[in-house]
Length: 142
Image (cartoon, rainbow, N blue to C red; front, side, top):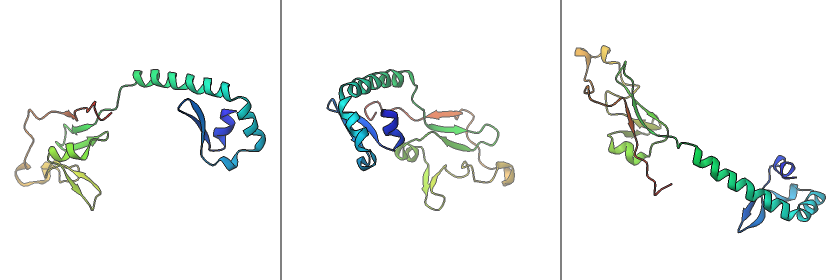
């Protein structure tokens, strides 16, 4: 039944221990709605089981890390994941409204000229600059 409901683009969730239909209820046929009401306790049990398994699955999944990656060949900096704008700005990155993305400080952005194209080879990052720099995780925001 739940799969039939979901195939219509509607889903059932638990709100305060009660099943609630989310989406356009007018799509659900009267027969299917009556069947849902008859099997209310089974639906509640099923949704509680799903929620319990969902928590177990989330605990086993490593959260995606975000940060800045240095291309060892070119010395250019690239963003990976979804770092916060505040953290990028604290690293010296600036928002470019024309490109609609954050850009690394000149000449380390991916679109800046390659150092071999610059007179004297251009500025370089220090040798101790990390290849990967992760954004610190904010456990309170999660």
